[in-house]
Image (cartoon, rainbow, N blue to C red; front, side, top):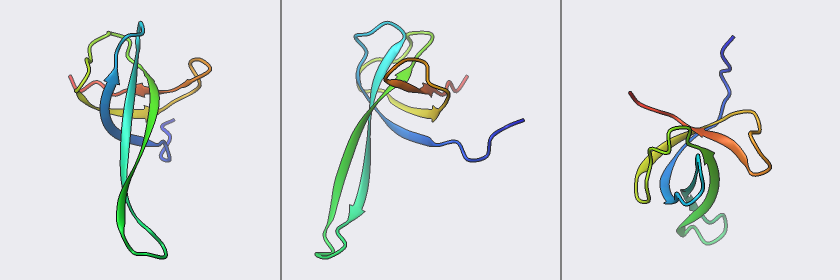
Length: 80
């Protein structure tokens, strides 16, 4: 059975120093509720990269999954 409400995010790899893990920075462009100015909010996610394929600067898509470790709850989506 496939889940229809899984979270999918797109971001840039900012670190690949760990084994089978990449750090992905995801930016959101939001509007301030009072001042109506747009600004960027960024957040970093640890994602599982089984093949150690992605390097710093690559744009990747990550999908939410079961917790793999204390900080990892996302997996990189491979487009083969």
